[in-house]
Image (cartoon, rainbow, N blue to C red; front, side, top):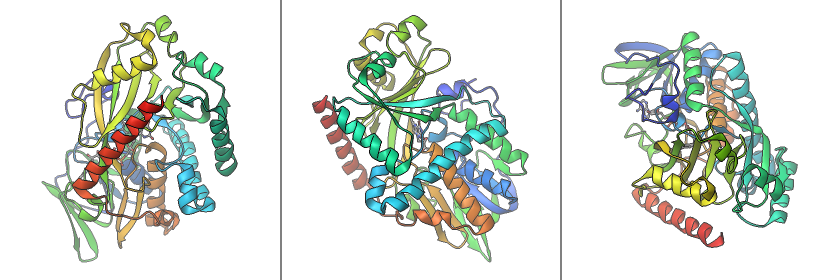
Length: 426
Ligand SMILES: Cc1cc2nc3c(=O)[nH]c(=O)nc-3n(C[C@H](O)[C@H](O)[C@H](O)COP(=O)(O)OP(=O)(O)OC[C@H]3O[C@@H](n4cnc5c(N)ncnc54)[C@H](O)[C@@H]3O)c2cc1C
């Protein structure tokens, strides 16, 4: 099934159902209006519905149309900013609190899959980060520090073990994270949406929020054919804010990244290269990330672009794959490729907070969103439903100016510089 209103990708093709939600027509009154039907919005709506709030969620296109339905499906604790960076900028205690929010979120994702019977498997444990550099001592030190400070359960894998899983001389030693896992993110997200609807939440697709206004004691969110009147509004629009709120729009920049799924590969040939079902990252700044799908397809992602774009995404991904696994040449055929837009703040941390009374935001998850959007949804829901203040842990990061168009050019230059460094060092 390939519903035309999603961007074509592996996950869309893998859908077992294609439930549509109606477009908003007329006026609806509710406790909370959530804007955006990605992981941030759906997690927020679910958290609110579970806490007994009436919730309406409006989505411009389809549930999971954005990054949430196009990502690599690797569920890993932590944030784009990284634990070590957080410890430096926030102090160890606060960094530990922030990281533990995502560890709890990872557990909650597993619980929700089981409790709500969401068919998003196979859920495969273990993520292996492989090093492009012959620096085992640096890796050991990093692991000791990360485990000591954040109790992450990382294991050091010597190169022989890494190379028995990944048959390439490009990789040296590795870091194995046994509690991280992989799944089908679009099926997961659509499963959560189903639960929101079962709990009385109202979901509208094809309903872009065009304007938000204060009217008396309420917030009113206007769409082309209707409006939602609510006590609270939560913006979960990621990089697609498009004039809805300049304060949030100016505080983030878009970063595209790319993915490809191959046609099924002969199992014997596949195992002569990628002899593992664990998800793989590498330690370069511009990392490849990939995993083998249940039917022996390879899902391969990598590179980023701010305004530059590879003309041929499938060709670029195949090139990167063959650089690591030349033995696959002639045996893999790209079947579908796509790009996705991530929403980054300059500090690389999520932006979670309240701009005005009853006017919330839950955004800026960058390339590391599966656990943090779950945590963000829970925090905002707990704040609205129960006056919980956990979300204030994100106040130090704030909504700093992302530099507008100039900021994007600078970021592209930085990316090219790091890519050149990766290239020179390997
Ligand atoms: C290729 C790729 C690979 C990735 N891999 C991983 C990974 O393996 N693990 C991981 O943790 N993270 C990964 N990420 C990052 C992760 O996908 C994101 O951080 C996460 O999905 C962000 O969720 P979101 O809800 O904030 O944004 P989105 O999923 O982009 O959702 C925003 C939604 O808001 C809607 N919207 C916007 N404006 C309006 C409006 N005015 N009215 C109504 N609706 C609106 C949009 O249509 C969209 O559906 C990856 C991202 C990409 C692109």
